[in-house]
Length: 257
Image (tube, rainbow, N blue to C red; front, side):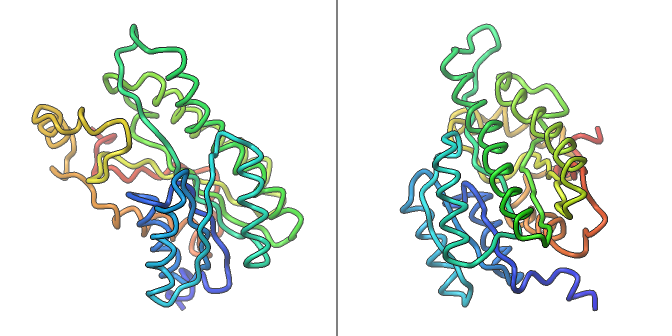
């Protein structure tokens, strides 16, 4: 019975930003739990590679290109998923970018780019997915990938932190509004993982940054991408049937310090 709680067989998921890193691990993890998965990325070749690996492992997958900041692109993503698999039950909003700059130097175009992808993109996909789920009449689950940056101050992350704080709050509002339709909306808040987001490679390559991560993470290490899979599968599954509006921190204890 416990195994069935986490069984996603017969369900259909979209994972944005699933061509690499955390998104790729999450797409593979959902597929491993039984879901059919649409992988997507702005670089379609990366999404295709993830989809190929899922199908090679015996799963079902569709690859698509998407720019989550572009509402029409998000609509095509949902439509393609429904056309291929017949429905949509799970959305994982994961696509994101980071540009590390001191607050006094943040360029307007960088602010707009980060907020467009990391916050507006989440809303675009969530709203369109929710409309499909409401039309189906069978509920669904939306999981937003937030961050420790939504809760604590981290140098150079002004725009990124604003987006992630916004994600936490729209998660709560959407959870309240869509509960009557059986749609659960939750978020996970990763800490520092081995995966490095585009735009943050130089910063995380510094020895001083690694020392800071280890010092302030009680578990004294970075997370592995597969360690985010369990929390997301849980929130997508019937095991979390009474969980909505939650932000589950997956950070090795970073925000408990």
